[in-house]
Length: 350
Image (cartoon, rainbow, N blue to C red):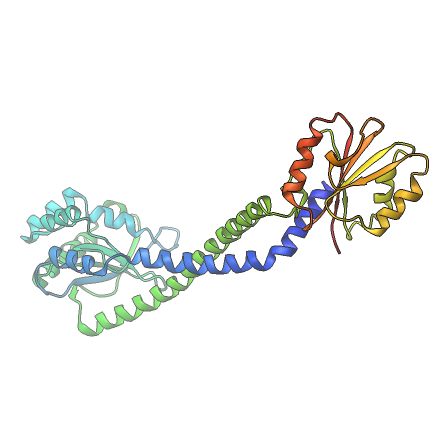
C-alpha cells in the first residue's frame, strides 16, 4: 500500500498542471455549452407565443399573500396553479366569464408551450422570492377577458370557495386590474435581476461540475498515456508475475540501504542482474562488495546470459522514465520460459 501511495503522489505531482488546466478548460466549455443548449431557439419560442395568444391586450392580475394557521408563509404556488388549470375549473371560469380560456389552455398543451417562472402562459401564478407576494395573472390577449377571469378567481377567494385556502389567512393588496406599463417595467427589472443572480449561480454550479468531470477525464487520459508510453514511468503502468518480489526505491522513502540489501540477499547465491541502462555506481559497487560468496552477472538481456544453470535468481532493474517498455516486455517473455525466482526493482530518480 505504501508503494502505491508513493507512486500515485508522484503521478499527481508530475501531472498536476495538465490535470488542472484540463479541468479549467472543460469547466468553461461545459458551463458555456450547457447554457447555450438550454437557451434553445429563441425564434421558436416567439413563434409559440404568437400562436398561443391572439391580440395584444395587456394581462390582468391581482396580488395576495397567504399564511398558514401557525403564522408561517405559504409558498406552495404550484398547488394553487394546479387548481386553476384543472379541466373542471377552466370549464367553469370559461362559462362564467364567457371567454375561451379553456380552449386557449388546451392549445397551450398541444403546442407544448414552455412556461417559465415569469411567464405562466394564459393563466397562472407567480411569486416574488423576496416578499412572497403571489400574483394571479391571466393573459389571453384580450384585456376585458383577462380582467373578467381574474375577477372571477378574486371573488372565489373572497367568498372562500377554494377549499384548500379556507384554512389559511389570505391578505389582498389590491383589487383585480390591468397591468400598467410601469408595472411591466418594474416586473421586467425584477425578473432580470433575479435571472441574473440565478444565472451566476447556475454558471458556477455548471463550472464546478465541468471541472470535476475535467479532473476525472484528464486524469484518465494521462493514466492511459502512461500505460502506453514508450518508457516505463510508474509501477502501476506495467505488470509483473504474482510470484515476483517487487521493491520500490524512491527518494521519499530514503531506502538506498534497503535496496542494496534487497538485491544482495540472500548472500552466496549466483544472481543475474538485467538492466536496460548502465547500473548506477552505488548499485554496481554493492554487487561486488556484498556478494563475495556468490557470483553476480550483469547483462542487458536475459537471453544474452551465457548460462543460467548456476543462476539462483534474476533481478530486473527498472529505471523510471528511462527503461524502454518494449525491452521490458521482451524480458518478461523470456522469463516465462525460465523457472527462476525473479525480483523487480524500480528506481525513481530524484
